[in-house]
Image (tube, rainbow, N blue to C red; front, side, top):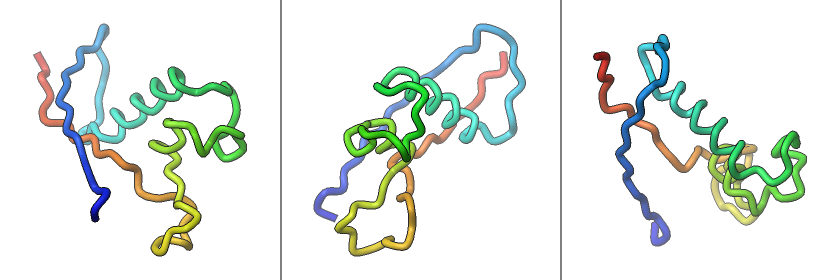
Length: 95
């Protein structure tokens, strides 16, 4: 694992209006992050990542549509690799 590295980011967020959240917040945060991230970085709006000419250079496609490298020795039978991030909600401040 000579190329393995990671970073840890801690942040807080506050809703502008009252919302109902599911018991497990990870998938909700991932969906919200993905939607906002794509809206910000996508160069060809309205195009599916699988059909996009820029998919091999796109940071959104790398993070959310993580491809298996063509020269990969492992995971060749899969269409996508595990996403290179983990969202772990530490706590909910319900005040």
